[in-house]
Amino acid sequence: SAVISQKPSRDICQRGTSLTIQCQVDSQVTMMFWYRQQPGQSLTLIATANQGSEATYESGFVIDKFPISRPNLTFSTLTVSNMSPEDSSIYLCSVVRDRGTYEQYFGPGTRLTVT
Amino acid sequence: LAKTTQPISMDSYEGQEVNITCSHNNIATNDYITWYQQFPSQGPRFIIQGYKTKVTNEVASLFIPADRKSSTLSLPRVSLSDTAVYYCLVAYAGQAGTALIFGKGTTLSVSS
Image (cartoon, rainbow over all chains, first blue to last red; front, side):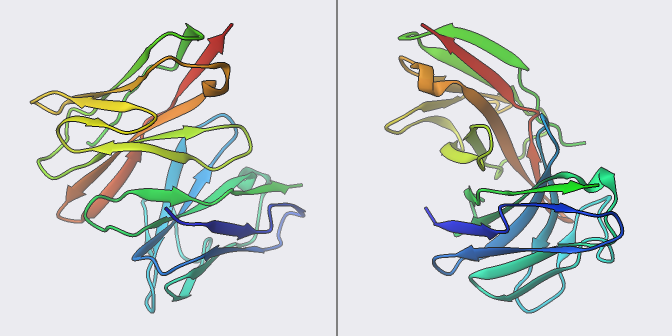
């Protein structure tokens, strides 16, 4: 498994502003992902954070809205830009060690409320 | 279109065995099936992962029939603390990359 921390754990932000969420892992991992989970719903993959290159975004998510960085094998950030109330959600990072099985381990999540 | 389907909710009593089935009709030969448990205000927790036939660990078993179009998570002798949402995830490998598709989750309620 892996120990994953996220900062902040929660935040309340005003519309039009941006928030950067950090994800730190206790050891090197091959893959890191960012998910969104809206209240009472399942998880939706936003993007794969690629070390040293641009993130790979899923359909419906764009880099201008959700810029992602991954400077090394243990750390990644997700920024939610120009926020609106529709961005209120829980944002989770996950990590994979074995690329063949995609066995993922999740962080505790960041609860974002946009007013 | 890859899709992962599971029941919305299930009820059980303490000490019973609970079986949650997930259907994944478009699963390919090399795709893995993973199950997660999620409590309120926490990230999903890995339970078990399988590829074919049967996998068992200290908390659950995963049964996958030969056609692999469905899978069943089996929780033996559930307790109140097993009340949670359970998600099935299939990593669908394709030419454009691997699509990670979660089911909508099954809310398990365990009563005494």
